[in-house]
Length: 227
Length: 227
Image (tube, rainbow over all chains, first blue to last red; front, top):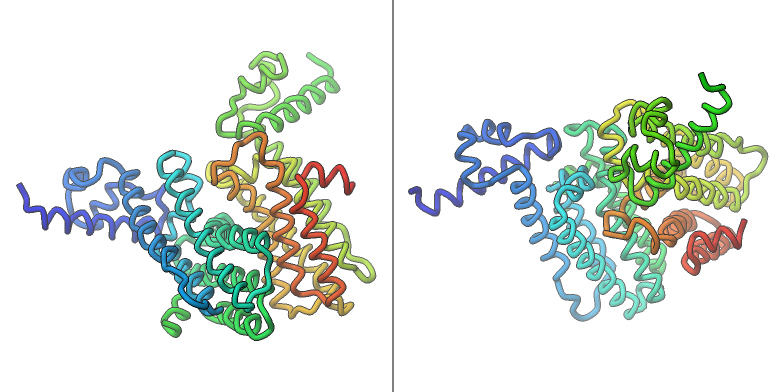
């Protein structure tokens, strides 16, 4: 029997390889054989760790959900400022971009796995609540001018953009690999432009500038420059 | 051999029944037998008109595309005003709402039919161009303040909202029938709120009011009141 440490390592290697492959060619077109080949392990070894491709996709969703959940769980202490909203949205787009296969083939993945659908719904609710809580804090400081209902609607819309933008882009025949590095940036631009309208002039100018910055560079270049 | 007139009528009846059924329970869960039963015709009679469920979905898409294409083809003559933009977006949402099964299961439908995907892409390009042309006219009159690039980005974003909103809502476990009458209205609200930011104060106020109106009523009630 192999030592647990090695089992954990192989499990992680399988997930990493699957993530790369799913992002590159799409989960529906990738097979467990592809993943085993990419790692130079036997299909039997792979099946020792995961019963099916669906199991692998599920484990990758759990990894994504843990990271996105952490971002949503950051407590809003004291007075938030407009950069906090930018940072939350940017960081969420960054995670979504890293796990982009989930969002490009979301309907396909959720249709076959009702438990995944429930967990996905719960995660979206957490994200929506985190965005709304931050906006309420910003409204409390006077930086943002929005009613309770406007905040709820905005939080729903921002969560929609986060979740659906990459799927829309892939719908339009964008190549799965290459040429798509601008897609997350366009999504981030749209989210900030939508939020900007509720801010006072300095906050609005800052968000407009941040939003504009996403249009000038590819997403990877943006991250290299900004982070 | 039956007379051509009756063949055309049966074909139309099949499409109407399929549209109702697809909208109600979703195209993936509906079968040709369901459709034949709803019309009290034999499955053989249905297959005389359509080879498969996919053919029926395709014919319904063609019907939707003809209606949406007409809306997109209305020439912008003279000086447009802000109500023209509202009317275009509202009318498109109305058609999308009438053919909502296409948008709730869009990824599923396009995955299995590459020809449909191409035609769908072309239709979205036409809609995007129509929105952009109207915005450029509004920018020309001074009603809208947006650069060429801002207009292109806005037209892309509005087309994204039109196309993806109903799919997002169905993703979130919304019941397929009932309780969803507000979904198109929420989408229309989001589209108008996004566009409003580029207008001068009177246009902005008008769009904000129109956008707010969508939040107060169910979509069907809105249409009954407004049209």
